[in-house]
Amino acid sequence: MIRRKHAAPGAARRARDSQRLAHDVPVPNAALPLNIVHVDGQFLLVNKPVGMVSQPGLGHAKDSVLNAAFGRYSHGLRTLGARRDWGLLHRLDKPTSGLMVLGLTPESYDHLREQFEQRHVKKEYLAIVHGRPTPPVGRIEARLVETDTGIKKVMVSGAGQEALTFYTTLAATDRASLVRIEIVTGRLHQIRAHMMFLGNSLIGDNLYPSAGKPAPAPTAESHFFLHCRMLQFTYPHTKTPRKFLAPLPDTFLTALASHGITPPAALGSRSDE
Image (tube, rainbow, N blue to C red; front, side):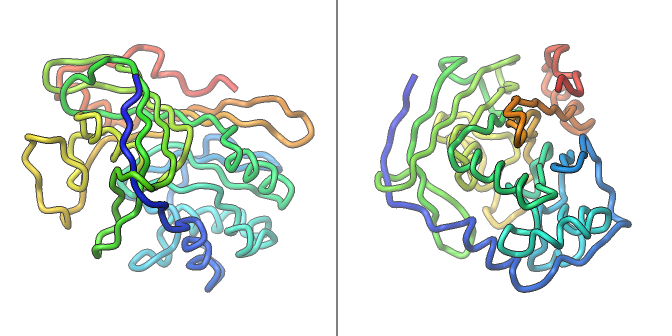
């Protein structure tokens, strides 16, 4: 299935994020928890908890994933510098949990940065959404543009940036579904906006509510359930794909149970590198 609509190119979000990171070296904070999924001489993969921001910013100068990583791997990350975002290769929203990857050397960072830009990194998410997606398996192709109204948000509109999402319903009741989502592009709020476009917003998402659902104040903080479960990419030199998995947090499993949804047993797997 293809659902299409069209709108104007989004701003260079990654460039803006890099400019913010360039002002100061992140403050090391080894006291912050850091759930390490895998680390070697080239990459650090962590399972970010809900409520933790990805990088330092307003109100979060010392409590981000990057601050925690600097508390343990500052020597390697400092060598990457602001030009390479201090090793940070991608970001997750504060309410989103799951896998994040940081490069630990200039070579490994550049190698994986190229894979992200060429869309060779496989990214799989799990989400709890309103209702039952129709059809249960499909593809959403709807261009997205960022809006500047005092709240960071995107909307489906004709001249926006290309955005492509694939989804599969894994389990469902009449009121909620567990959906596996693979994003080919990595636009701001892509999954949230695309699921709203489909008519099955993430439960608890204030910015992107489904039609006919009560819409809390958009300024209120969202408490939705979205988890980056899998990342797959190739290592420098070997060119062999490696897959990393992060188990669902207890809060996600509790939310599934509250909606009468039993997740497939395979989702309990931690890793199959």
